[in-house]
Length: 567
Image (cartoon, rainbow, N blue to C red; front, side, top):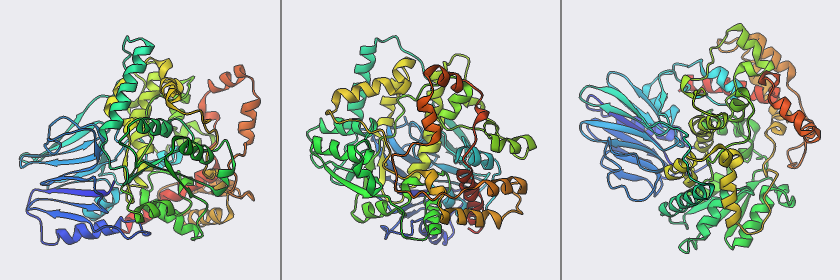
């Protein structure tokens, strides 16, 4: 989606507010596109600016919806009405109140700030910081970035900025100038339906979600991998005769097309079998300087995530889609269930919710008491939850709104996005299923197999290994330079940074390999099942984070703090 900033003031705006919003919009644009002109609306005390606006945006007075809602919602713009279904960030307004609404899993991050004079909400932390006019670093993000590669479950770069939780809204009463939060609880509660009934209800919800998008498919593309999620969407869309203009894309290394077990190869075969147009885009390392590639990654994603491997082309794919006037992509992000878990630590780590205390090379920070890091109480396992229910609730309440939303943020300055598998009607059915139908996405996979042509599923990724990228000499040199020049800092201990520097490695292997098996994975393949199970049940602190990846996370912290302080 386009990114936006929305402001409500207790006083009339100064004449300079339009210029200020325009400058903010320009500052958060990608540097490799010619964008559409920003949409800027100014009232006496309500205003907004939309960066690189797309056709799907809804406007009504000073109310604004970025994204796609399911079906018809004539009252989408009225505060305190029911939350729409769909994928969106919603800002709605009347004379008495305004309300900022997140979608069912917070797939579109919305941040907000309030003082005695203004209430500001935005889909960009940087936009908020620039509007506020200064920066107050929140040190609580440091341990989370080190242990998860993200800002953590609840924090932002600035301690004054708050993220709207998933399936929630923040309401401003303009008369009392007070905020209230309305949060719909995410709960997994098994219904007594038969397996067949669960399957029928999920299939109906899937059909309904796909049909309710009502997109002009000539303007949208469906990224297809070789797995189940995007294949499921493709098969459901093909079942509708109105989707004749459907276009599919895949991206990855050039060499991936030669591997029959690879996403790239399988996606191409699937598109051919289903008779839809298909385009393959290369993500081989851009010829631009490494520092420029990484800085663009940090700017577009605001340093919220370390998953850079799909963007090593310098966002060339997304530039092309923007230049070709593609309005958006149909993503296969989903919440059908996650892989098997054996203990509380393994459950957290499966969804990417690791703590510094879980890793040997971060335990020193934990012992030194340098940072406070705790799992929020509402993300802890409750007494009435099975391990599998807790696992999937963590996926819905943490991984989707934190990790996957951050990945979406990287693309949303270029194209719109919709996640039909994350519509409320689908998630409500998933949360009623017994554990065994959700584990390994068992029920969803069964439905996809029943719809799919007999094209094998991929087992290898089409993109370069992130770990291979971090070990390239030019990357290592950049990471070392940044860390070495910041050994004396107030963010991370010098002793820890020296330990990271001493353990960074350079690899002579290139990025053009997608089917390699690491020693760790080779050992996994050779171990008997009973021994694998025993090892999985052990305490998670036996894990060591890859030092090059850790160095990149340190780099993100140092570079983002420096950037935000200069805003």
